[in-house]
Image (cartoon, rainbow, N blue to C red):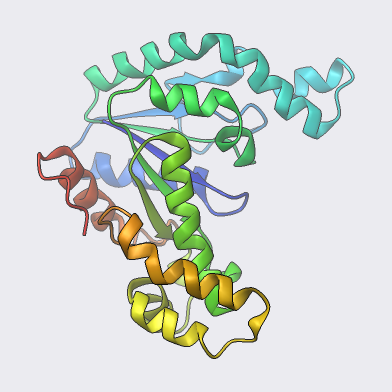
Length: 247
């Protein structure tokens, strides 16, 4: 089973990939690792499949590209290899219980480039976890944003996407975050009292989110201390069963 970890830069994708892999191995599972980041210098895990074998941002910068241009160009050059990479990941899935896929540090290079969409589309029912950090959750509309962004990601990639609040170890009042992320009625009620700029749009969006989103729960984890990893594994088990209910 292929599990993708996505999220914005600094959300902890690579750290989670390594730490969750160690957790799975400790539980007796066999794990494969895939690195899709052409710009990373060092990895905290041994990648079985690594796109840096084909191209790196550093190589492209030597050709005269700037940092951003090199990132975009790297995935342009990788795109013809999508079928090859998907085949390698599929083979790895046949050998291991779980294959963890670490996506690029700059999420847009995976999510908004056809390389990422085509790769996910060439795999058999992969599961995507969208990581986000508590520091971006300051206002009620921020909570609405991350819930909707997970839904947009699911639409873009065509794969079930589960929102995951990472860095739980940095949070003081976790119940505050849980209430805003899990109770949509509470969130929409709070949005009514926010200043009109942006809050009204968030209120309307959150009001019908339960109607358009698949049944899925928000997860709360810490890649640093492993808290919540058992919930990721539970969701993976539920996803593999015929029911597919991730509530």
